[in-house]
Length: 43
Length: 339
Length: 199
Image (tube, rainbow over all chains, first blue to last red; front, top):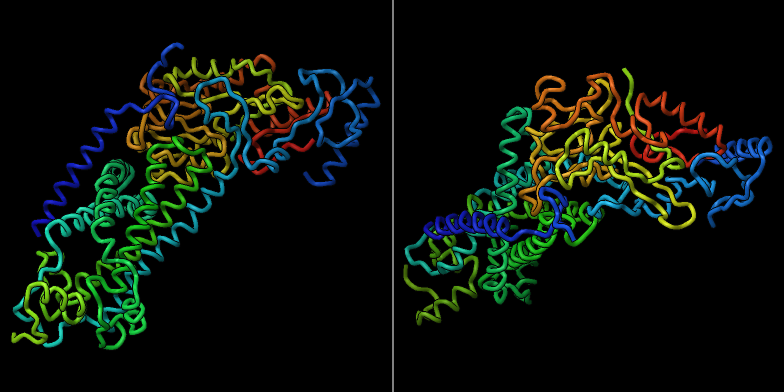
């Protein structure tokens, strides 16, 4: 069952990695559920 | 609008037109012709009635122009939200019960009737490597993340009905928050596992004539025959394609849900959610069967994913063509080695 | 008690967006959150109408029905409110809402939508005492507790947007339609309350 344990570790690492990556890549304000949260840059 | 109400409205409008001086009325192309002009009061300079229900009949949802940057807000009314609500509140719960409880009941009945499928004459001593370390790793990567995704997904559908009364509002909300986070982020290891399994196992899962014969003989589940099979038998190939196609569909719809309104509008979001839930439930039913046969349902089957080595007798019974090939590769060609 | 409703007289709305501004000011909502908005249908064409829309506080509210954590509740005034302590920000209420009322304060992906925010009919929320600073910070004004109607409707310059007991505002609207001779109907009512005002 060593591969099972390795898979679980990789899964958790992958999940955390995905969270960090998605938090780092800022999604443009026009996208997603809201334009909100931050004051938009004046054009 | 009922025809009676329409007549009433026209008569009323007529009465008012007679009592006041008429102004030239501009009518919409599809407005009822000859409607008497209304008095020039208020801010409605064209003096026509614009009816929501009529527009909704033409377009299903009403969209217009909006001055704020959030373009989703330009959808004024989308009554389909109510249909989506009705589906979630009724049919979805029944489908969930059928796929989860129904499948569990079915497996229980099957186990009661058939019991564990034994290796004829018991386990031997010789073993054969069935799955290498990487194959086991990708299987368990997919399986472990799938279990958490399935549980957290079922929580969104049925948790309110099942867990909320047991846990209370606060505890259930906390649990659901963590379930949601794990659902979102463990989706990525799951996708990776699906892609790996597709790439590594595809060549073993092309359907062929042997599978047809395997299905004709009932896969060995009905009666005690063991139809010949390669590395994966017909049933396993079906599981493979359910996982790959189902997992692919879950990936596409799941990413659409995770990045809302990135690629689609409100209708698309609703459809994505319907598809995601429907495919997931069918997959849960299929995987319960897969878990059953890989654990308590068949003696020796779990070994393949435990440490990769299976009993040679088991291999000969269930995957005779594959076992013969493997033995030939290793130079042992004797059809009946002493055990 | 009264059954509170909103009614936007589309023939009177001039798209001044003052209701939107009033709502933002009364409730101090964050950037990007619009509890109320004005949508213009047939913009620039014959039959152009503007409608001010927020949460309609539906009968058998779809948002409440689909919420996975059951965070919605209905007040004695039939106002649909929700508890932000329980909300997990899943976004399902937005899919179910016929009027696009739910708002989410954060940028980005599924995992970080933040707690849902929507029109409270200026009724605050479940937090602490009515009109407390904690309630104001999370849910906005509680004008109803002071015996006042929502600010959007109260300050509407053309009295297009009406708020109050559904039967009373329906009566006001009927009288208007009879007097001026036309009426584009009570937008959203059929969907929200399964009834419309027949004049």
